Structure formats: C-alpha cells, structure tokens
Length: 183
View (spheres, rainbow, N blue to C red):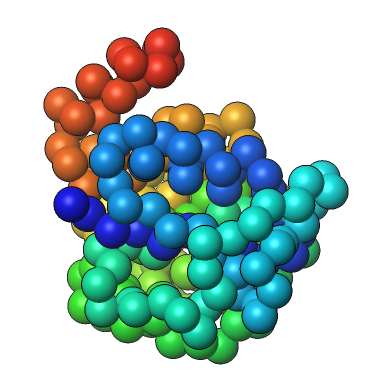
C-alpha cells in the first residue's frame, strides 16, 4: 500500500487539503495529515480547524511514497517556513520521489529550483514563482515525480492525478467514476 503525507500549515486551503486526503484514502492510499507545527489542531484560511494525525516531528519520511503540499495563504508561506519539511521536499525531489503541490504551493518548488525545465501549473497570478518551469493552464499536471494543481476548483483533478501517478490511469479513471466526477 502506498503511503502519503499531506502537510498542513496554519492558513491552509481547506478544500485543497481535505479533498486530497479524502480521495487518497478512498483509493486505499495510507494518508497521514501532518501539522508542520507542534500543534495537533490546524486552522485553515477559512477558519476550519482540523485535528491532524501527526506533527512533523513524528513522521517517518523514509516510509512515505509522496509528500503533498496544499495551497492557501498563509498556509503556503507556513509550509515554506518549515525547514524540516523543506529538507524533505528537496530530498524527495532529488531522489525522484513524488512531490505534489496545488494552488500557491507549487511556488515552493519553484523557489527551490525543482521546477527548472519541468511542466507545472499553479494558481493564476503565481506563475512568476514557478522559476524555470513550463507553465500550463491545466487543472493538474504530472511531470515525472511532480504533480501540480491550479487551485481549489482543481482539487478533484489534482487528487485524481496523484492517484494516476501512484496507481495508474485505470485506477484514477475508476475513482473518477466512483465519485461521479466528469472532466
């Protein structure tokens, strides 16, 4: 069974984060919600507080197949300010392990030089942060070990792209059918 961790910083975009958690769990992916602070409860950008499964200090990154970075503000900034997480983002990227980011969060990958020469998407008006990327205006983009999404309205296609990357296109199509999603 694949293992993923979705990282939550205060001010995360609720739909982007929780849609991914929900759809990955439906697909049988062992998905852990992780706070990047020492607090187990994290409040999103629309005042929705969610209790996490773990705090970052408890995560065994070696057991993970994927890191997921939801967007939102100041959630994205709080993820990027977490040095322990950034070390792992760099490690995953350099080891061709999967890193997924949506909305403003792909900017983190751009700032770290991970997107150079890669296809990616992000929230409209954040494209300048995707340093070196070939920017596409698609709901979700898969480029090797990277999966990016545009924003809240693309949360389902982004989650399905993650499933496609982990389990294949057929699994993603079955999940889309199961949740009555049509592109």
